[in-house]
Length: 176
View 1 (tube, helix red, strand yellow):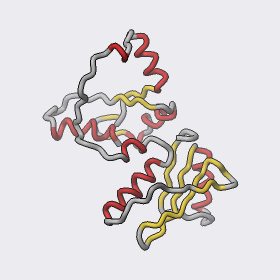
View 2 (cartoon, rainbow, N blue to C red):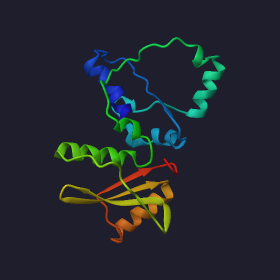
View 3 (cartoon, rainbow, N blue to C red):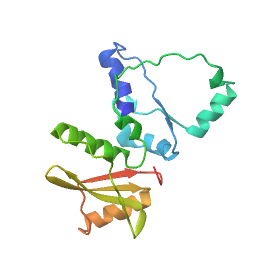
View 4 (spheres, rainbow, N blue to C red):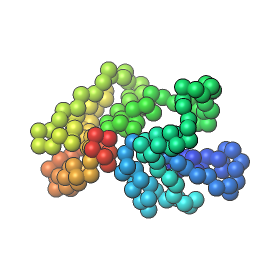
């Protein structure tokens, strides 16, 4: 999602015109490299994300460059997209997108935020967590899936009518 914003925002708001914007993502999971190359992640300007570096690769580059963070002078970061919510912190973890969506739904409905969500592990597959989450008068069935094998199995159960969820979050890598 951020890749699309980064590619389009400068054109619209920063007057960059047709200048080439390169999006580099730093990700803990090497599967993100594959995801970035998928055709559905390509817009009119080209791929949403041009390069994906794993955290291991980023550490290697920092070391090769002789950068020692403890020796750098502190400086303020820019904030081109403004202030963020706590959802940005949890978004990258398995279950983070679901929690962010549910918290936003509660906020929009004017309902109080719960202290946390309890996800019950399914006995048959520890890569799938499910929960019934009550939002006011509504109870939503959610599933959080970790790994593509588990995602395929869960989606098959949904297609066959053996399972039903209002929201399914899938993280490609096991454990997000």
